[in-house]
Amino acid sequence: MEKVVFYTKEICSLCDDAEALLEMFQQDYEFEIEKRDIYTNDDWLEKYHLLIPVVEVKGIQLDCEHVDYFTMERTLKENLSSRKK
Image (tube, rainbow, N blue to C red):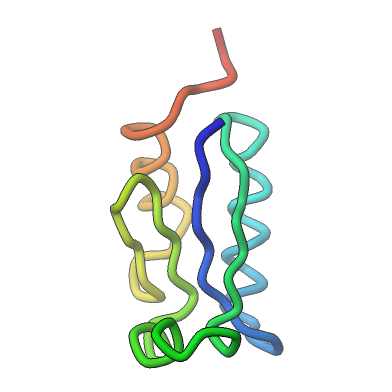
């Protein structure tokens, strides 16, 4: 099963919204969510601290400015298998 990497941190309302979107899209697309708290890794913190939430699908990263329903749906649709047959 494909993984979607989700860079996040505690106490982040944008992150909470992005996670809810990802969980909703799991009904339509086959993927696991791998949550990564940026405060547990110095490289992640340096790279993403101003960009979270960040959603990564097969190397394509959507940062806080692009984590919305339509962009996320298009990215998942283009890169992941649909559950609908």
